[in-house]
Image (tube, rainbow, N blue to C red; front, side, top):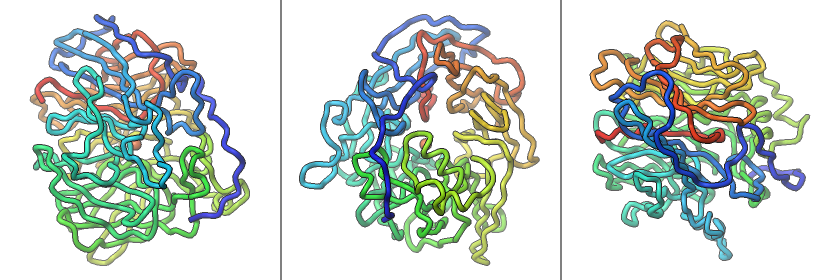
Length: 460
Ligand SMILES: [Fe+2]
């Protein structure tokens, strides 16, 4: 636990492209510029926080989940619709009950939306997933037949070979971390507690062919912040480590690393020498402090140990190479642009990938409004420039049906005018990111900046 000296929380001012929308709408036959590839037939779905009209929240992360959906079919943009996830929290139920227990269904369900084994799930790391219909109506919380008794991360990993879904739940009471695995047909088959020193905010993790990789990083639960938004803050005393655990459980091999935070892993894999390589977006302590306060989080007051750490750099693509034979870690920054939301061809999750995609925004170095493609083998990168007036949300890779190369396919991203005037669904050729968009779908309304999404093809 950390000591705290905090002011009362103030509602965060969500404006411009962060401004929530006030209602749910439907629109059909959306205007398209360019040509939508006919094989892009399915739904692009994206989740994000959207407080109710008049509702003020202390932190960007705690708004009610809203799914924005765009239905593409054989070259047409058939519909757009947006729906709040109808959670118990939206109905007014408290997360923390009077008896001190937590209602894992009274959550915002605002971070990701995925499909696995025929279930469409809205996810948030503080509680249970919510199952949705293909039309984005809410069916209810999902605990996999009563078997899931912890929260579920918003960043599960589907093994592209086995179809199993690896995930975890974290909480504020021991066991702080629990590993779970669903079979390819969606049954919760395995739940294993993992021993970690404290209750950290574990936003993401990684898998490789044979291992699970844990990120045990120094953003730690702080009881004094409960009820004030996100009750987590940096703790200089916690240390930072990555842990490698066999898929079937067993001992975790821990590797100490330079203190940092990682919201998002790009990918991880085992190299030919048996080392575990993890690519992710790293926040130095100083950058963490700046980023977390800008969205309503609490940190040690300015001038304290976090600011004193004064590490250089931004939210950069970074690589950790863990060598079980020697116990050593090699750390390497791969680029100096400030990025977020790394994505890849999901057919290579846990395996060696060549390409990573990301978006950049609000960088002091000027790379505003770009979608990026990294060739992690050569170090080259390519950018699709959106300009300073536009902000890109996560770019989701959709593979071409008969793609022969890793980058044969499209990137889908909702791009919003920075002032919040309008949004488009951008379809980019992932093989040539610098080319003009393949197609642009004009959406009937602004879509506020949000978190993560998925392409759900009709062929699933
Ligand atoms: Fe995330």
